Length: 562
Image (cartoon, rainbow, N blue to C red; front, side, top):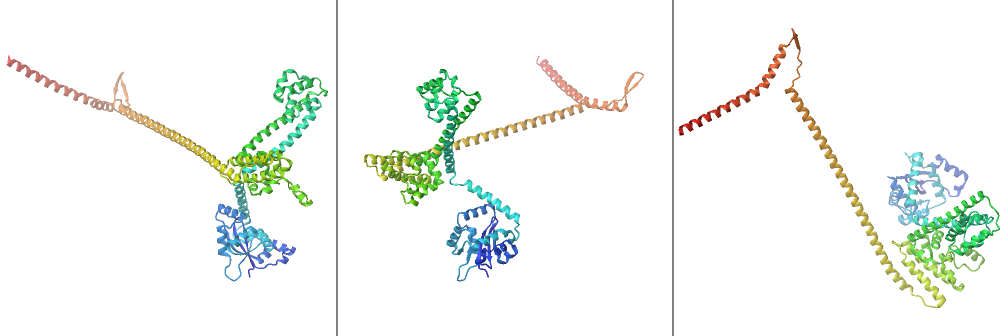
């Protein structure tokens, strides 16, 4: 008697396992766990009821994507409807490993679903002995199918990741924070190291990057002259500071330093300067990325604070799902749980404290403005997440609202209503969206024109090549034909004019005489050559006779007239 059916999803296909005997109480005993590892003992408890192999790798990927999302695929639905026993008062019991998929199957097919407990142990055994349960499936083929499906599934997840643009922001803001710490540590090391030689420079120059540039430029303070004053002014952007550095170098209390130590200090300070330059480039990259992914959030609260909010939430989608109360204390989780534990005051703000609005507000209004700012940040993140064309119109309007609220707290001037502001923002956003669409259409038209021109140029070039090849082939054919014609003419002339005859000459008493056979051939050739000449002579004689007769007749006629 079948007590339970278990659904097992494999890379090769779906399998429906019929469980004949099972005991929940003794399932976790070591003897029972060992019996699961033995094929003979396990096959007495379990048998394969049905197997549905996937037709292709694409079908397997579609099915596994549906399972991972907790959706019932059409293939799975058809498989269960055809193979699960129907009829009877009780609904058929189906064991499933994933609770999310079980809930979807329960809604779709109205089955009684069981997850965990016995089902997990049975699926463990089926996974181990699956190739022996299914006829025609070897362990090697099963492992190959699992490997191929795993690669394609991972590739699809990486390729079609919704948060792939957010990941760039998360990585860049993390690197920016790390660079700030490293540059600060390295510049302090340069200050301490170069301070042995020129201690007065630390008091004159307070900025780290400027100090490193000056340490690289000055080198040995004893060699510093007025010629380098202009270069120092370019770095400090202050003539008074440059003059003070020059005077301090002349009366410095620092120790002398060897050239090798100076070389090391200069190389280390140049590394720190290159790191500061890279940090500026990275900040520009972050600004451009925030303008593409979350322009409204960046316009409202700033690029760095907005990127930190996205990084802390994990993605822009997660940030858009958060309520305003969560966004307000995002980043202050420790203080929140400490306050809940000690029953103290909860924190008023987290990461949004770094925005300029909270710093500008009075102490009594900091909590109120942080709550208002968190509300606007939530709106901006949702607009950025779900809008098709990214524009910063809503962000600018929300920023104006926060400014008005700050002025209201300070002066009492009433701000505009949110409805009026949003109507203006929607109108402007539509205009901007239409302009962006026009630009995109123009770009597409230009691309199409370029492609057409390229295709036309290619077609003309191909046509010219074909014509050139045809002309070459015609010339070659003509040359070959002319050569054949000339060769034939030469052969005819040789046959007619100079027949190849080997004459055997016989000399008798110093006189050359031809053989009688050769004489006959010569006579024939002479006769052939003489025939046309005789015909011409006969024709000429006939014409002369006719002319003579005419002349005689004319003379007789003239005499008769006289």
